[in-house]
Picture 1 (tube, rainbow, N blue to C red):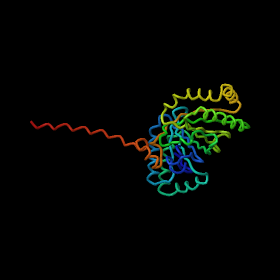
Picture 2: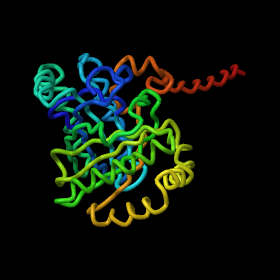
Picture 3: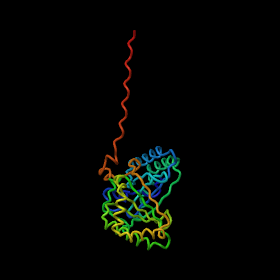
Picture 4: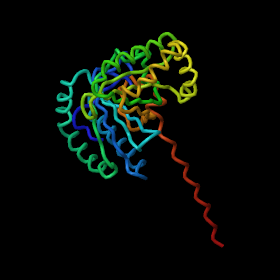
Length: 283
């Protein structure tokens, strides 16, 4: 994991204790690492060593790791912060010894396991989010991330369509938490990310019923018109399913305390040593 800038704690994916923060972080950096085929296990071990080094150094930032369950074999590290200015401050902390040398050593190990890596910077969009007050990162186990790329010149159309769609969510009383971010660096202009936080994949089983409720709340005509115009508004839409990986994460203590069984599981018990066979008596 390349920690070239800063590590903070996103509310589930902010700066300040993750579990204690009630609102999503104003700014996040997403580091995407593409893992080579067959190198998932050693990569996970290196990332666990990264987290151990940060704990030992009592590094003030935090991050959460998400492994893809769809699309390319990647691990996403969510590194939130209260502002862009805080990035440089935490970078200075990371440059101090012995953490600097520890990170450099693990970077050489990690580099052999990655096919590529990429960083994105994004800002929180509360006007495009829904149910953010239900944000509960400590209990989040899976996340779906919708990546929407808006065509140049169609920003106003996108915002109007989003307002209409979210209105359908509210009218239908959909029980979800969707947190929206606008990418400002690292991806084409007009890229938006929508994080849907889930405590279980069972949530996905109810998706068809929720979509039907939204259609009914909006009205078939309005919904059909919205779908028709989406091709003019968006260049592309992609959904990615990810799983929270506590072993590769460096969460705050408040988050661990909220669910220690998940965030700090007990190490597996070592198998008992086989009893030595009794010695034969001399004849």
